Length: 413
Image 1: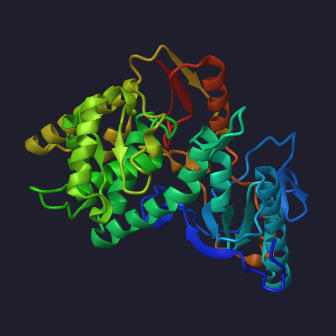
Image 2: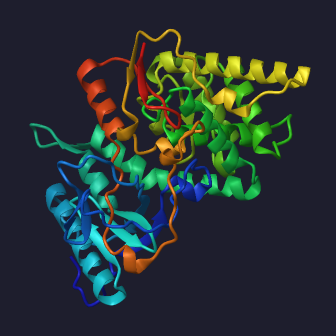
Image 3: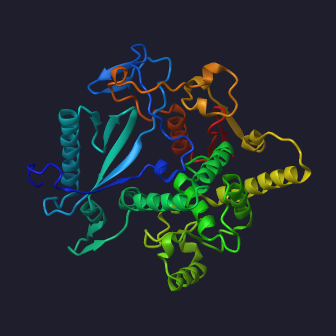
């Protein structure tokens, strides 16, 4: 590693990855004070941890994901393990500098650096381009070297290289069409309330899907209101045939007409080699990297059915000028599930996000950030329901649906 006389000599560029920076997040983080509850939390250096015998949950805190893209340097080793250890050392040194020079507290792990600043948690990860090359490197028994994508390299490329570019492009769409961000949030609010969680359709896929509607708008004008954009997206889901068409998200027209024609021709000829939902963007060499595993055919069929029913309900209501509660379209139909698992509200840290709160105790009050009362990194992204659901999916290998934003239960078909 280069000498430390220039502390940030390796630092090439700094890119924010958190989707909030594309204005599409349903519940963006809000700076607030995180008080230390001795009955609930333990102090562990600069951070707080949950007591093993805690009877309550701490406030749900989502980090703002950030990528630090490192500049090219011959100082990086040729061994993946050694390179990853050097990245960890960089986290440690950066943490020391933040505390000694700026009095900013942070917490270091092997994979990232959590920084607590002005009531928000920023999670920094380092991206070294050489690491991606090393992960793809394969040497056969005869000593011949080749480079091939694998699960680990694809994840690193997706999260650390491609996602920042997508986030920037989505932000550009919102700057041009201010209805874009709120419409994405509205679509996610609706979809999650129908028990289609991020395991089935990740947030970034929803954002890209909606972006394709905005970018491929003609002959229609781009929707000026989020509500109109939401209806247009529902109609798009109803009419779109994912079996015969890819989703084209051509940011800045970076994909030429000739390339698009070639992509569509290859898609038609070799449909089975593409994901169920093929999403073409300019940044991933046409790999459809965000939809490689999800959504499944079952989920795509369900999405069309949900969109059809929601659009029909809204259309009939508007035509008849009937009074209705907007909340009605955010209530799932629980018929048809083989199993419903009801969970205690006390283990749901996001219950306050529900549209159906009757008890003031279920609400979460945001206190203005006060540094004197909040000087430790809080417990981050602790959600027992998500962890339980993940374990069930691994153990049972079945299709599970989680109800976000409303109540605490899980369904299985």
